[in-house]
Length: 333
Image (cartoon, rainbow, N blue to C red):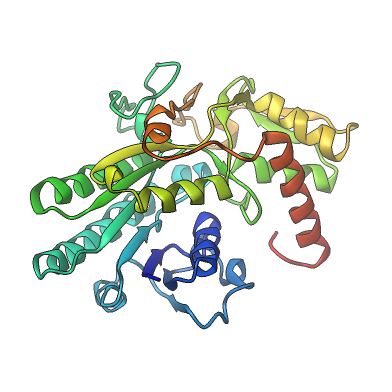
């Protein structure tokens, strides 16, 4: 039994992680400012005797210091999320990604120097690859970003800074860190409010309106179920060979966004149409996107026993069922 701190634990991924850790018998402390997450995501476990929930920001040094006193593991998930938020609030994006990570690592570094060995998982993102033109991304590939006049790249750059900082704490101070780069994590509880494509499609389909596909829809992505991602995170944290390394986490099965829309339409209402929208209309004239995001999972598979358990069709059916129930009961919109 361990005591785990999860920043961003009321978010989509964080809430699933918290439930998993509690089910394993661990004590869990959650810090979340509820800016993009919600306490409702933890409704099933909010009164669990092993859960300590605090509404607050991971940028609050005193709060983080108190929560770290008993921690044996830290999962740092608190960050800005979603293309829509990144495009509309680049200042918030940069600050929300960099400042809390600096505080968490600094406090852990102090504890490590005092003999308290606390392992930390840093949640990163495929966005750090920027617009690298490779067909398949490997962890040691170059990071290729667009100009600073394109705010879209601020997210990937700020998360790359997080990675550099975490790995510096490992190399300079011996702080045990594991970095995971998430590729399009999906599943129940994910909101479409910040531009996440699958819940956005499902919400539109259930409302009986056309599904909006940006650009030509031929961009390719790989979608992984949140449960597969949580398994990867927690297993890596229990694997000594993972310390000080970076791992792609997700699925290796690419699909175009247009074909994803068609799958959702087939699952909900085959009579629905697709509506195409330019990036300029959706976001701004300065918006830039990456045509393909496909990870190599070779490093992950060579380090832990990993094989995604959820196929995309199954994920879509699960998200549709969850969202339909949420709409019927007046839950998350």
